[in-house]
Amino acid sequence: MRTTAKIIDGNALSKQLREDVAARTSALKARGLTPGLAVVLVGDNPASQVYVRNKVKACLDAGLHSVLEKYEATMTEAELLARVDALNNDPSIHGILVQLPLPAHIDAHKVIEAISPAKDVDGFHVASAGALMVGQPGFWPCTPYGCMKMLESIGYDLRGKHAVVIGRSNIVGKPMALMLLQKNATVTVCHSATANLKAMTLQADVIVAAVGKRNVLTADMVKPGAVVLDVGMNRDDAGKLCGDVDFAGVSQVASHITPVPGGVGPMTITMLLVNTLEAAERACAS
Image (cartoon, rainbow, N blue to C red; front, side):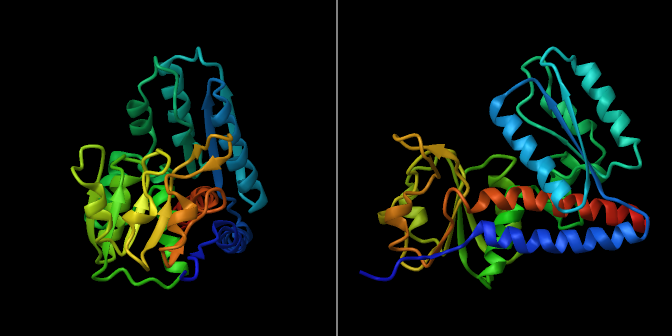
């Protein structure tokens, strides 16, 4: 049996990138500017509470200023839009993150569009998506941005390679495809209506699985030596955290693979810090 795939360690890479963020933050502080992130949480979704806590802690650990605003699920859309507007006008805040999902009576799209593109560190605003589309500077969504950093960390040259993205969400799939395209990969986007997923993935040099479905990618669907990035977050039958990829099988075929947990997950929050820092650096330069 060939040697198992090399693990792309998201925790180790995150640590390295966060050290860089901390150093650049110190340099900004020396010039009298502390990068600031506001995290807004509406309602009491337990998963959202964990994510938010981790984001705030990561900020503080890297020396950034972080504000957590928690509101009851009964908050109105108008009240939330007013808070976003206030944060847009607060010079001590460089990044605004409204944790999704929002309660059903609030239009998430309207709230995201209310965030100033200059503070859209999640990269979800239409202006950010447009900037990515045409290759202009803007904020890249954190999860696919983290995936790109992982490919960079193994020295992987995407030029001329065939990348298959499984998933077409606005948060991961679509921006991932555009980022890969920017690096001169040939990109195929697969989704629930794709007729023969296996035929597509077997051609791929790089596979990004991002559908939130267990075992969507198995060993027989992967070309030997391919690089596999697993963005999924699911639970197996024993309740343990797992991804979209059958890790045990695929790791025997792939050249590199990201684990779950400890792969793409830590990178998402790290890229949020990078985006917040860059927002502060731009504010400082303007």
